[in-house]
Image (tube, rainbow, N blue to C red; front, side):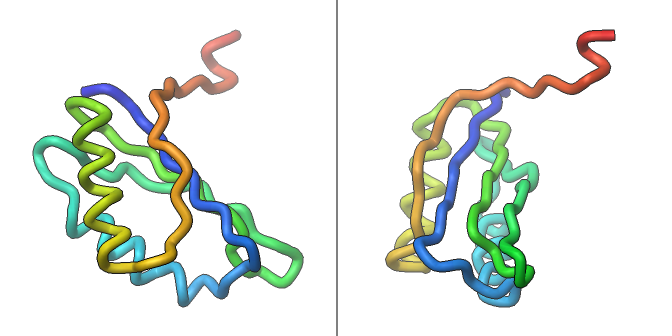
Length: 95
């Protein structure tokens, strides 16, 4: 499986409670071809969500596109940038 990311930048930050249903739907749409691993969430000073960077394992980018299209049908207007191919690097990679 390859790694991909999608970025969701909100024009106006939203409460975490408003983003949670999208996370639950993303998990429910995961399948053998594309699996949502999790997200890194940027919060504003008030603790509201301003950006979400989602990570996926998928057989190909088309599988991620299909999941994101299904998600946008459930949540019209939900912002999506990507998906993009990615790799994960941490500090231990450069010890």
